[in-house]
Amino acid sequence: MTAATSIERSRHLVLGSGLAGLYFALEVADRGPVTILTKAQLQDSNTRMAQGGISAVFDPADTPASHVEDTLRVGAGLCHREMVERAVSEGPALVARLADRYGVRFDRADEDPFAPYELGREGGHSHRRVVHHRDMTGAEIVRGLVAAVRRHPNIRVVEHAVAVDLLSREKVDGRPGCFGAYALDTRTGRVTAHVADVTLLATGGAGKVYRYTSNPDVATADGIAMAYRIGAKVANLEFMQFHPTCLYHPEARSFLLSEALRGEGGILRRADGSDLMEGRHPMGSLAPRDVVAREIDAEIKRSGHPCVYLDMTHLDPEFLVRRFPGIHTRCMELGIDMRRQPLPVVPAAHYMCGGVVVDPDGRTTIPGLLAAGEVAMSGMHGACRLASNSLLEAVVLADHAARVAAECAVPPPSEVAPWKEGDAVDSDEAVMVTANWAEVRAAMWNFVGIVRSDRRLARARRRIEMIRDEIREYYWSYRVTRDLVELRNISLVAHLIVECAERRTESRGLHFTLDHPRTDPAQAHDTVLDRTSGPPP
Image 1: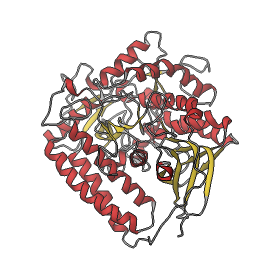
Image 2: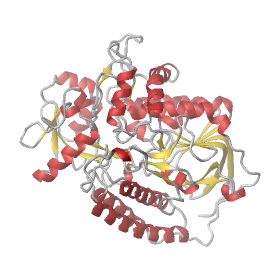
Image 3: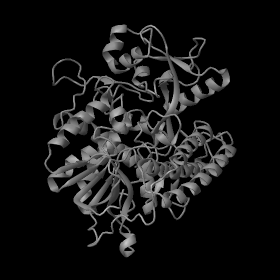
Image 4: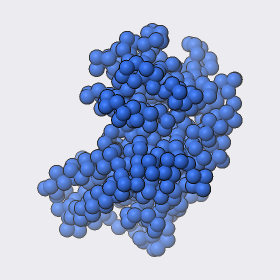
């Protein structure tokens, strides 16, 4: 492998190919060339894994005010009302745009293409307001957007391209700014400088920071890490949402069981068949995710049984197959028939409510750099995300980022330095990367999980700091690989999660600590870090 010599230029650079990245690319493509860099194939993203749907007010019995209040209540005092109100008010029009302009086939009440949407209900919602495509909503959204991207002559897609670092204007002339990114081609080992007037971070989440996650392998916190290294503010990383119901099976690989199962009447039960959530929350099994995940975690620890159960057997069997064909098929492949037997479930890391700080238009604190989707922290989710608000926030932020992209542009410098390897050589100790990867994820799962304590956080910090020291030495000694880039990123973001968690000396939303079990009204504010106030990048 050799150092990069090429420099690629476009007007817009998009890092990531989920809903936010694809939608933004399509909305700006008529104004100038767009390059999309994606770590695997174009369709691989967290969006594609989304089962439930996108929340929006279509039911005549529902109101935008009710959706706003549900979001604020679940967000436990940290939601930014301006962002919530914007998302809720614009959601219906953007859902319609996805359907009408990009051909996304949301389920309707009957065969008439103009019939009202069939609406589901999920945890924390007071009404049915989840627009969906069976139990494969994310895959259908990605299908529609990918097809549109492939057709557009102004959009160039570069697959198997792992962003290594953002191109920093500060390193050129001392002024803050971003003008693109270095990216590794994982097939050739070459690093190319992708230069652009405006860069959108749409790199998704951070689930792979934890040992058990519902996220795909691409969710390694890359955008948060790169933005932090360039000087952007990040916030609220202590709020990692653990999905309560991932299928517990040795071959399931944390297969997600949609919250829509509980929305249609599924009941969480202990091993003895008793109702787990009875008397625990007024909404029972449809309580917000933070509440349900803690109850499952506590029951597993109390009983010693490895899981709890999601019971669907009291519902109409034909309805279950029709409404949840993907889940039914996968469970049957594993020898589990949800029509006749309860589904074994455990929590797993699912969604990062914090991220790179953005305003309601997707602007980060770095000129030329926008962010949308799970990588961003707009204030929409506060301390706990309301189910199916993630795709809503993603499309709203992407839409506004597209509107302001031209005014956010930062002209690239006249000369761009190519990637420099220095004296780096090919690694002959890949086992070091593998071992450190496993240790970071184990430390985060064991000590910075659903329930935390001061002692657990301190132990995680010590281990991660030691691992990061090893990674820094390794990173500068050997040529970059995808595994090394991702390890560098997850270890940094793990450190940032611990830092945020230690600074929040209360329990709120998804952050629950044994040493500070009550909510402190004085801490109803975001936990904000940058490289001058947080751990070294």
